Length: 288
Image 1 (cartoon, rainbow, N blue to C red):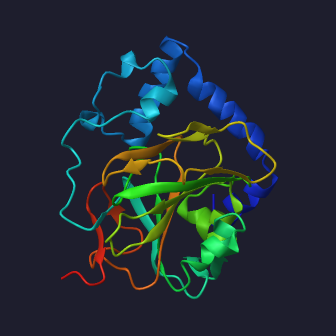
Image 2 (cartoon, rainbow, N blue to C red):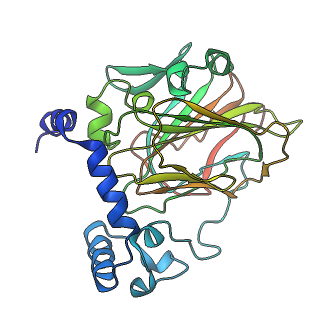
Image 3 (cartoon, helix red, strand yellow):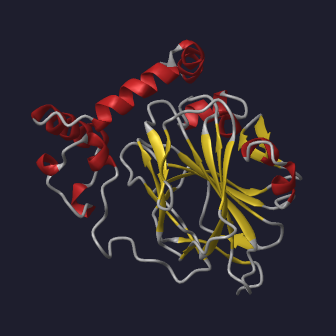
C-alpha cells in the first residue's frame, strides 16, 4: 500500500480500540497459542534470539514477556563515550533544535513545548539545543537505557493519539511525536557534567500496550484525559550510564533533548542508519 494511503487510513482506524486489543493479546497467557504467536513474530520480523538472555521461545508465558526480553550479558558493551545510544533501532532524525523547532521529516517540524506537554519553562532550557529521535522497529530489543548518568527530577504523562511511528507515518503526519501519547522523563546530569538537564521522551503508538519506567512501573494504562506529573526532586533516583530506565510493551520511538552547545553527535550517524544500544552517540562539545 502506498505511504499516503497507509497514513490516511490511520486517521479513520479505531487506534485506541486496536491498542487495547493488542495489549490484551500481548499480556494473555495462552500456552501453545502464545508460543505460536511468538514463533510467528520471530520469523516474520527476523528477531535475533541468539542475543536473548533466554532464547527458548516456548518458555515465555506471554508475548509481553518475550517482547521485553533481556539481552545476554556483554552483547551490548558500552562505548567509551560521554553519551551512548540508549536503544537498539534506527535513527529517525537528529541534530540542532532551530529555536524551539524539532525537525521530524521534510515539511514537518514540531515545538519542544508541544513535545513536553505544554511546559514552556521546561522547553526553554532546550532553545537552540540538540535532539535525537530514535525509532524501535518490531524486531528490536525494547528496553531503554540511560545515555549518561542522570538524576531523575520529573515524569510527565501526556495523553494523545496513537498513530504508528514508522518512517512512512513520520513523513505523513504533522507533529507526530508531539501528537501521540508520551511519557516525558526529565533528568539532571551529575554536577560537573557538560550536559546539564536533559529530557528523554517515550512516545507511544498504535498497538503499544503500555510504557513503563524502572522507578514507577507501568505508566499507562490507565490512559488519562489530562496531563499528569510526578515530582522526584526530594528523592535521590540516580541512574548510571547504560542502566535500564524503561521499556515499551510493543515498540515505538524515543526522543531526547539536550541544551545548547553541550554535545557533538557521532560523525558516523545519519538518518535511517541502524544503531545499537551502547554505541557512541555523542561527546561533550569540549571533548576531543
